[in-house]
Length: 197
Image: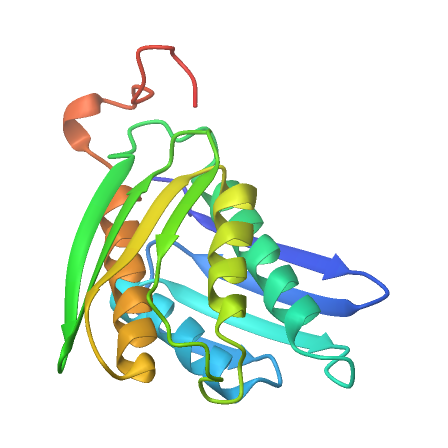
């Protein structure tokens, strides 16, 4: 099997991002965005998805976190899409539940070529680790759009917003891990009746 690794550089007036992902990794990560809690969430994608991930981002944090979070989402989706290539032999879809103390999250992913994000994070409106809660949804929407995947993320239970969003990111990681596996039964076939994704 060819190496499913990709590097993406995104350079705008607002951010500069260098991001590398290895689909068939071991869960190693370097996350340097200047936003500590966001780095913590990105590390969960690597660790619980068993991807290798390196993210180095410099953004206009003197304005706010929005551009950095958005552009990392775009770059991460582009890197996954590039690493997956034509998606031959891919399982394509995956889902996962993840508990964290009182919180429970669910995520379903279909790497379908049709971008859509359906989110019900149930956050309370307060900053989490210094991040406005709407940015978590915006990150997931940006990631789904650039990966061209259908992603549903839902908080099913929880009181503590840190626990809820962390459970959501861990569920996303596990769903992505399942969806990006290669199914040897397919013999390299594209997993779609259309013949392409």
